[in-house]
Image (cartoon, helix red, strand yellow):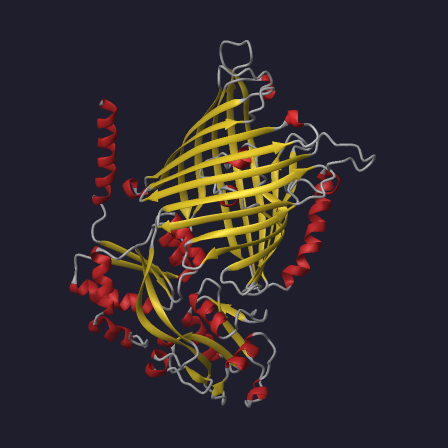
Length: 369
Length: 269
């Protein structure tokens, strides 16, 4: 009932704006997934099936309204399976922003305001060639969307892109009292260059803080207050059917009032994709991914994870621009923690695991006005 | 050592596989404005080179550019220059969009034949398309409501028109958005009070061209850019065109090819 009310409120808010739009595009993207996970519980010698289920992992429904050639709006809601709510389905607002182009006399520059993409690393243009998330999203280093304002654009001539942003810093799910007394915004800078076709190099910097230095209630020092510095560097090589991306990230967290909790998390990912279309005639991709994730360098808690994924995509029902309307994806991932590590608290009490995921993804976009 | 051989063998196989099964097939898609030029020149080229098969589709400049980015066509036809965003996306995928101008064109403002208005300024066109002027009597014409006809947004012609005539302003919401130049000519030709815009090659006797800022779209005014809605039409390839694509583009730019361009109603380079 609550969700129906939310939907009705959204419709009431959006419809008047849409009536003023010059063009409206309706789009949807659904991910139907089967997941089979085997894992080794501490003390067990053999793997046991820990998960085996079907789910709707994503149900994006989006509206894009073009008010003029320079002003566009985007609204995206996500309907998804969840065990966090009693009815098993969730609804969250993913994007709700306005783009203003040509506001400043700089070519190809857009000012974006609202709940929008976070231009950090690969998270903002991650196209889910893998079923898995972008590394920064997977390891919760940065949020994929957040409330804020950004200046983003493209370097004339197609030499690359850039973004400067100011956000809440706590992601699209956090708002109001969930913002943890955070009065400091997060700041972001992102630059990607393509000096020659097929070679992209880029980097992002983000500063953020969580909570207040002193408690609002009694002005005592707040041990939970921390300042964060996030860095990202990426290299992408694309030549013919081969596309390889390597991404390194680090997150340095400093607790001004509790220095013993300071830590740095690091991640390194390599992601090769081979497109077989030229050889098979069908739009098939084979892919791999290797992740090394060090959650913290703080000796009090160590988790060093290696995740390896192999997968295959079959893309079909293409539109006239050769973008697939449907994609069948199969991924097999193994996650293993370093034997030498002393970590005691693994997720769900489990240690090494393997995961098989089969996903049918379908999407459409139609201009309705 | 054995592994090295296997890797070398696989790489060699990957390199030579594309040689097989492709034949002399050339695929183009994109702009509906460039379509008649592409079709007519392709027919003439295939007559000269029967071993080459050229398939051509429309869809709009945006569609052709996206197809080039996705590596599914060798040539993207476009009635506008590619945007920085599109070039950046293509380059990141290892595609190097390289433009070849194939013709000059003027976007002609077309009216119903019965309309006595002979000239419109850019400011008046903008006022019409943004809904500020709604009756021809305000422009020295009859007391007749203006029926605004525009192209859909996948159209490169729309983007050039929007940039050059409207300076990015919003087209009024009651405007009819049509998917092709032919549809514009047909609708304007059958609707008293209608105004539309099309590439010169699509103008027929069913409609009337009006001058813009007192300049008519002619070979001279388009080539020297004194006609305010002048532009070039392009074919984009991935990097410098090679093989059959290079021969086809050279043919279009040759005297024989440009004669076909003229025959299609466009203006030569």
